[in-house]
Image 1 (spheres, rainbow, N blue to C red):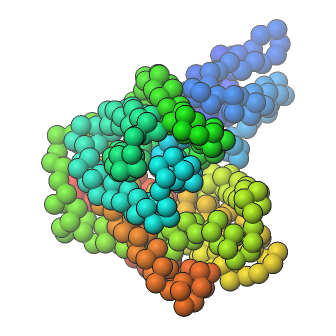
Image 2: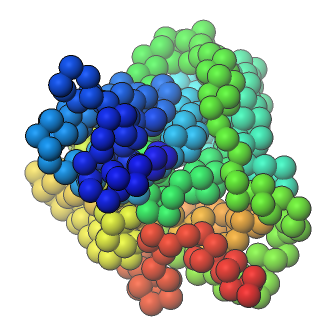
Image 3: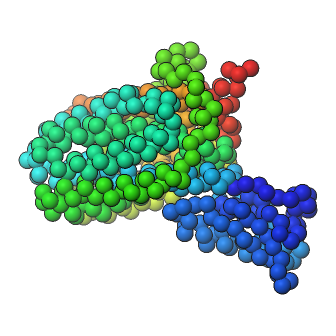
Length: 493
């Protein structure tokens, strides 16, 4: 939000008639002005938050009334940062872009993202294509290879622009996802998902990079958390469509076809998205994987990719086998599993925002390391405990992991310069997916002798090792500009 305070307002905190209000006085609002009419002060402003303005409107209106009361009483205007506002003010253009990117994240997460329709509709795909457990497992493994194809798309955001790739990839995602339910065979269905995973990987990276580059340093983590929270909303929409998927072949196809309805909304949102000024300044520079794999950035890639590998080796089996563990070990039926996942999982969504906010205010490592460590231990306990203990342990694991992950997530964008930021994140994601596959493979090998729960719990040591590396080798990047955290300033000297 633009700081448009007059000199008098800046010096006294008591603006006169028609005085522009600072972003500290009225967060989130734009073009805010305090006027006096008929002996009373009134605040005028607009909300630069398309699509989600209703979520902030009551809080901004309440703050505006506080400003009016303070002005009427001749007192200094409020300047504290309320809990609902970003720690560092975001200007109007960036706010519009952020809201539009949140909408796109919500829309494409319906058919893709972390928990895609592929995973959610797996039982119905088995019925539609008459495929057994072995075929399903093979299909899931093949789909993970889609991230390798994303290596071809990774450089596009650095070469042709973040905004252009976000819009093109989001539309391509909708077309691909919409067609998948019509696939005549399981082989084509899986092949389509491989392509979709490739597009989704590039899209997710481009969205994250664009958000990190357009918001101020003091609100980077919370902005990325908002995008993640919006993605969670897309997953909720996908879950609500499952009764339709269970209705037979036509219902299965319809669930995927619904993704096509997002295209007009994506094109409308594109009008609110501004290209990253950082990208525009560096667009003429070379963009090569070679630079990420050599010199200073090779070390950073190994640190980021290595810690992500270790964390994913535990996280992937922890999340993939939750329902199977509840059913096989604790005898939960399908309804009980849904209730368990809702009770223990839904509270983790607001923790994304809390974790991001704390990371911006306190620091990445001070917040992320203890929370992720506690989450790993809680999940390990979940896979070892019996009886009612599994409920609070799973709840703690999800909530702490959500907040801790949000605190550490900005490192992916903060450790690399603008010209290779997307390439670096693509390579790191490949290492992350490799870690996921490795963890699943280890569990498959150990579960026969140790059992499913203990074989997953023993992997909890891996994220703890990763956190030790983060503590010792990662810089603290909170409230620092990307040019500083990435080393671009040092290069320019």
